[in-house]
Length: 233
Ligand code: URA
Ligand code: SF4
Image (cartoon, rainbow, N blue to C red; front, side):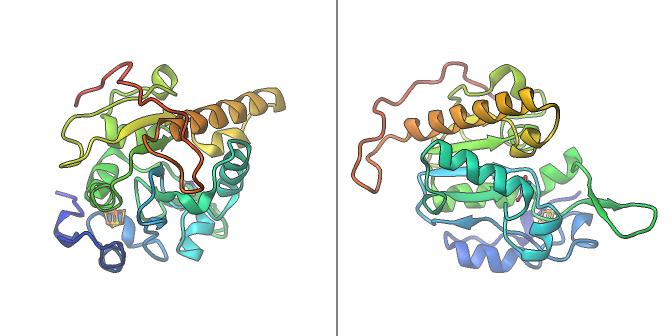
């Protein structure tokens, strides 16, 4: 069975996890990708963002969200007045899955399969245990399904504050699913604007859900919402 589990060390040190992830062969995706793209950001982040998988640019750079989707994310974070440096960013799957076009030049993103997402899950669980965020933002269907189960529909539950019991031992992060930033890059301009505004609104909700005071001393927007629609696995 495909699983990253045998490669995940028992540690709460991100640098040790990241180093071990370089050698992961938990599913076939490591074979064609350039490198593992592990999460990055503030180790004590209150908010963790989970995307789908590295893209072409991330695969070359070895860091998450540095390509076109990352630029959309940066704009959305700026609009929501959230500092990227305060976050921890990672992906549901840590190797780039792609096909090449006929001429074999361009690498085209391919959605990871359910088995690949499940294989890679032990890395996210280890990141969740280590960073221990208060709020987790699931960017798009792949991340949402990885954490909330295959039947979860972002379109139906986006922006809701959700809880899953037992997801991470000793922690109960709130989960908020939203669209993937790359969805903003598709479709006609009116729907793009709407998609962008929706992403910003969901990021604001996530930040407002953090229980404590922000590091700049300003108050987070207060009360922690109980689950509007608890989802169980
Ligand atoms: N899309 C993602 O989901 N993650 C990245 O890191 C880049 C693009
Ligand atoms: Fe391991 Fe995940 Fe890469 Fe598969 S995608 S080899 S499980 S790190």
